Length: 353
Image 1 (cartoon, rainbow, N blue to C red):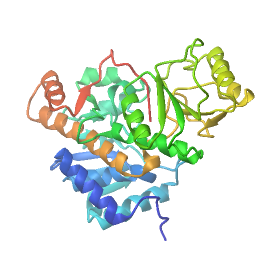
Image 2 (image 1 turned 180 degrees about the horizontal axis):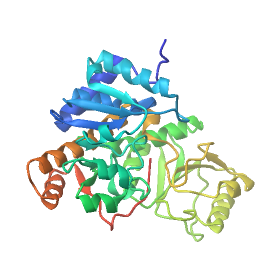
Image 3 (image 1 turned 90 degrees about the vertical axis):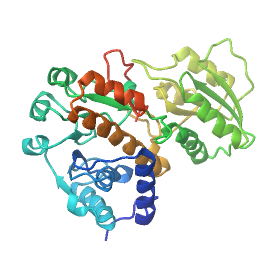
């Protein structure tokens, strides 16, 4: 008996995958894809690749805090069999040389990382690496970029705001889930949003459409005077330390006694906030620099669209390189389509998910 995944109905998953493949015009015919077999919403990646026509999909998995090796295999093959693509998916425990040498598209996924010097040296000259997220989220420990540059292996990120991917449209639902779980009813609630990035309009629209009274600020100043809030949402771009200093936190809590503070994005001094009598959600802190809630928390659809977008980046680069285009022209073609962007040394790198 395979455990039911929340939000996962085989028929619904298959429908969402096919809709997203169609929206992205994803066509992997003839490609050998190396990706991961995961649990939860990320189980869909090898299924998407196979349904998009990939000749062969190698999926690496192992036991982790998210689930056992056996669980990942069962989840993946359950859906693969329902989608009638199980014959295309080959699940492995290890990143073997003979697998890497065959791969055309190698996704920068959890169980594939790190993509190190040795792994890059095994890749065929026409192999490509889609980051599977935006370039500014890149972590240097994930991929040996120097080795990729030396071998002219293209590495590119997904435009998560492309209409066919549209990941930012789910930000509001993610915030609302956090608020509702903390018993903030949203309607007629007074909410302060501290946000210094492109998340702001998506979050504000969702909250206001549910009847919230939203005040936005790009940061907190001790000169700020506002009426007490029901909730304060922190959605500030992470940096080396905390996104708000201790003086700001003391001032916020002093002016909003007993306030509920939501750490949507950006690290804060939770210990100090708790000492000051504030409550911080989610109750379990996220990894440093990561979001307090993942897109997968609201269901599989955001992840399906994100993974389709990442594989589309891989498709476009692979077909360009295979056709004989130079690396530079391949990058330009990708960027012209709007689906992705090359990874450069100037990318402002902050991991989000």
